[in-house]
Length: 385
Ligand SMILES: O=C(CCc1ccccc1NC(=O)c1cccc(C(F)(F)F)c1)NO
Ligand SMILES: [Zn+2]
Image (tube, rainbow, N blue to C red):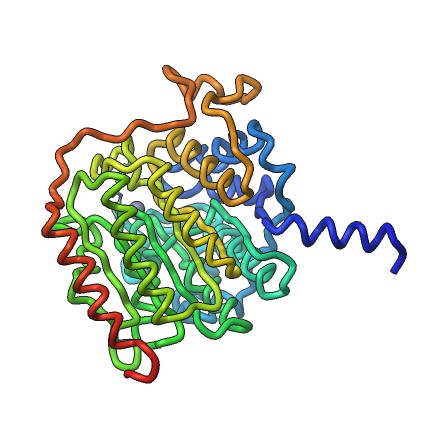
């Protein structure tokens, strides 16, 4: 191999952060209810801050039918293929309901090509980590954590998170999944509830009537997976400092007892102040501190998106997280070169101020969460079932 090729490879490896992006993927992402236009907004802001020059940009490869079947049922995948072709949707009305393709997950045009793109992007990112080409990969168009084996749920048509974790398991023995989205990562937890090879850790809002309703403190996993599902149920109003203190304590315990070989992080931005969900008082700095802690472990890590319905705030959040992941500090004011500049009015600032909702989580609540979770995790220390 000549010198220049060596230089290229060295440069490639030094770009330890791979970033999945291409226009087709953004086009497919726009088919998801309530986030139309978000994919481009996020990418444009990341580009405006010139963060792309610190990353290796690669396009997604559409997921094959086989890779979709590594988690989803043949019935569901074949239904998506069938309904994709047919013009008259009325014919499949009852099937649609059976596969959750109603209400929150209305049928979308070209749905099979859509799920191949969404799943393919996260699989392409995971493959980069399996190949050892990079230590970190980002797919802000993934993170659809509610989709179940045999159906769509909660705006999630395909569970790209489960597929990506399954891909990582080809090389890594113990995978830690961390879910910062406002909603419980039920689809991912269900997929791995019975296995000790994947520990799922979800911090989320949990109160009567709030979707999906699962992820209570007593939900610890099943069979050989008992104690490998970790849930941190929170009430409205939690703020950066308490959230990070809790995460810091639990993440340390998970790291010591589970000793992960790779990490997948779902960064749903509906937990950030300003989201129409109006629940937590968090800012990107709070989640950013948690991300810094995960990066300090220096493990192969895949970052995914998720919820986030205040589109400019979601762009602010994931741009800020990208700057932390690549280790390049960026200025607080939105670059006016950005074509979407006006979306960031009236402040044109990157920072998001914390909400001022009263914190329903008392100090006792937080203490009980930390203690209970840490006691549960004592059960997975070396050798204990
Ligand atoms: O964000 C999600 C999906 C949430 C969801 C699941 C099932 C039914 C409805 C929803 N959507 C919302 O909870 C929601 C929250 C805030 C804002 C919106 C919006 F899109 F209408 F703005 C929607 N999972 O991480
Ligand atoms: Zn969510």
